[in-house]
Image 1 (tube, rainbow, N blue to C red):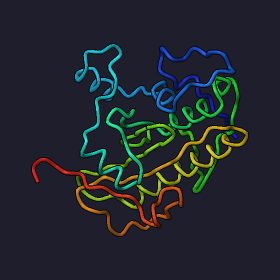
Image 2: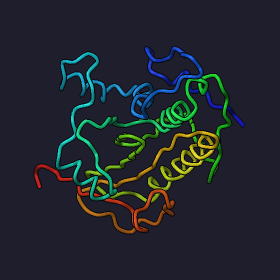
Image 3: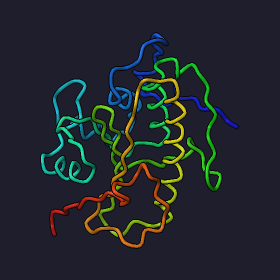
Amino acid sequence: MKTLDFTSQLRGQHRTIHDPEVRMDSLAQVLERFNRKERNLLIRAILSDKKPPPPAPLSEGFCEKVKDALGFPIPADAWWGTDYHMSWLAGALAIFMKGEAALQDTYPNPVGRKQRQLVEGNQEDIDLVIATQNHLVLIEAKAFGTFGNAQIASKLDRLNLLHDFYQELASGSDRVVCFHLLLLSPKKPQRLEACWPSWACKDSKVPWIKLQLGWK
């Protein structure tokens, strides 16, 4: 089984390995270290003159919708990133749970259903990731068309591996991460046949909020 190397995935200026005993203060800080999505960084740069530019504030209306769907408050200044790679999520969780020592350790690359792996040589990602305190919100959006069962099943296969990886990291750690999955689209998804894990459901239902398109 191949092992995971998270160091190569860190954004350039964040690749230095610090004291192995040090753990970063927040989940958001660790997620930021892996954020290499150029379009996301471009959006920040054109919306803020700060250096480095932070994520733009989330709207009050959007925060309320997410709160209603998931059951906890989302502050406007919560960290967020778009098109966030699955492998980055794995690396961020390892560092958050185990500290800088995670960059020197080796981990097996888990294999799941249909030989899917936690870290693969592709750019499969999550459309929007929000982090506030110990909550990790994973949002999949669809503006046009419908959520396809094959696409959703593919994401769930790897997200289940990610959640299992986190549970292994949590053994012996005092840190906790609460996973949440949320669908965002103009119309509520119908006929989704994928097997949804318990961690991704609220009251046995898949959380969903409406995506308001400006011309409708």
